[in-house]
Image 1 (cartoon, rainbow, N blue to C red):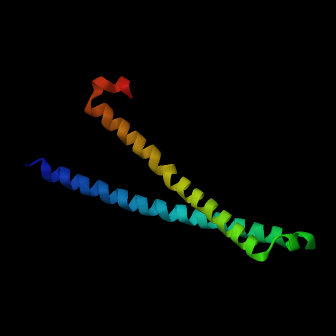
Image 2: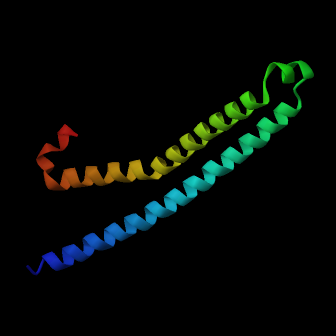
Image 3: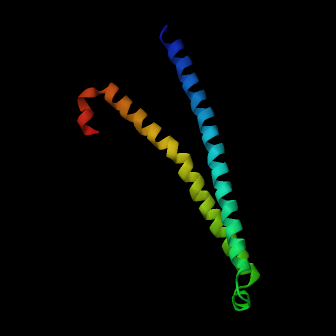
Length: 111
């Protein structure tokens, strides 16, 4: 019983640290994703401005808007997911490796 309270407190502290780190990671990933999307939209707008009249007649305005919006949104989502897992995956791997080796060191060769 004496061991449960300190372990419970440690568990809560680690969970809170994970919560804060996850929130910070998500905020930075969102900023990077929206920044990338803004840069892409500016580059797309600049490119559309250089179209000739033949190209403008070939593509409708609605078609250009839909294509640009969907493509930029997909890139933004990919960038955000990449940067969210860039920090999380190695930490989870190292933690799982340490736990596996300390829990049952005789089976280290399985990993």
